[in-house]
Length: 183
Image (tube, rainbow, N blue to C red; front, side, top):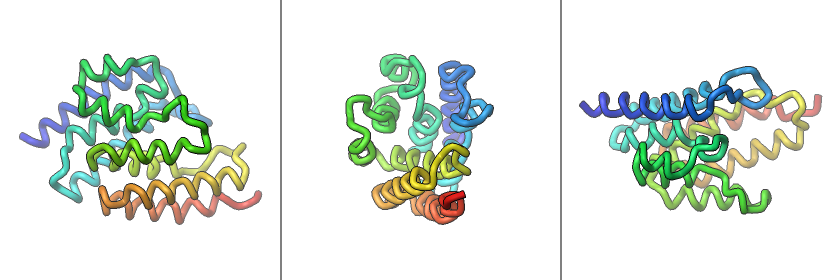
């Protein structure tokens, strides 16, 4: 019964996100953006399987919807009406604050995420695991190194929520270094 609830919640969020993100593609690629949401969700689902006891519905819905407010015209009211206030609060915490200067953005983001349940922390860990792929060719070595350092900040701040995802992220951070060298 519990797993059925997770599956149904995933499908509802996935359909909502697919409509919201529409034809958006993952930056620097021709891959549909919905694939990124699938990758993040897969990481969260694997963590839920490895670490029982979390609210899987909250984790999965926040994973699928984590970029819907930031990257689409979807309103907070639409998210709340469809998924409720807990999911909305998680998605809002995972959304970059537009009014925060870039230099303070990650600290602000982590502070807001840490005010949420562990399941929201798990989404941010999974998001960075998913994002630590080969960077776009136009990124410089310093930009790549800065992104890797930012991933370490995320790991340090959010690791207690999921040892499974913390280990995955630590591995990805280490492997990412191979792309952070001058050409």
